[in-house]
Amino acid sequence: MARRKGRVKDKWREKKWVTVSAPDSFNNVPIAYVPITDDENAVGRVLEVTLYDILKGDPSQHQYKIYFQINKVEEDKVTTIFKRYEYSKEFLRSLVRRGSSKINFIIDIKTKDGYVFRIKILALTHRQLNTSRKHALRLIARDVINNTVPQMTIDQFVQATCYSKINSDIMAAFKKVIRVRHVGLEKVKLIRTAEKEIALLEA
Image 1 (tube, rainbow, N blue to C red):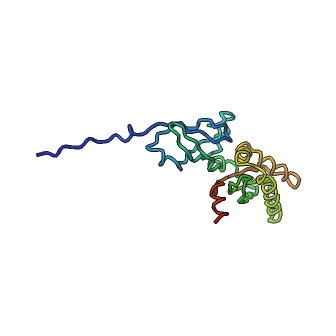
Image 2 (cartoon, one colour):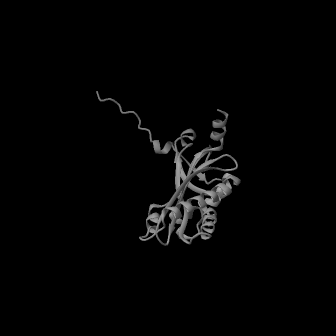
Image 3 (cartoon, one colour):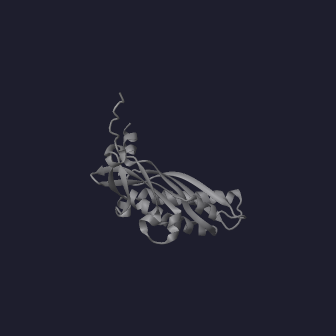
């Protein structure tokens, strides 16, 4: 006698669709409409968008990628925190040219409200620089970051990152020493939230 087959569950139909919003720094604009199985498993999920997807401005904003992490689910509304910002690979390749120096600098910095970020700064010059000149530019970039970011909240920092305010500040400082072709935050990554920072200090 043939065994009766059980009813196959349609896992797709069991999912619910939710609207995911950007953090306060982007005025909570909707960034995605996605299916989730349950609220608990959705928390921690990371979504990738471009700056253009949020601002709908200059098409060149496609070259900046932003990652948001889901931190709360309430019925069909989902909130996120800023997780990462970086240049697209295509944009990075387009910046590199022969005959110029590429200067990288990485620094960990904490915002006024206790969020810790790792920032990778990229500078490209018009011509080759010697080691001492490169070192001088790294020190200038470090000073700008140390003098500005600790005065910002996370929302102010995210806006300064994505709207190129920090880039402009570093460029202005560089111009006092040498003209450079490009300065930017190649990558910005959240490495510790305010809550985790507090827990670490208490421990």
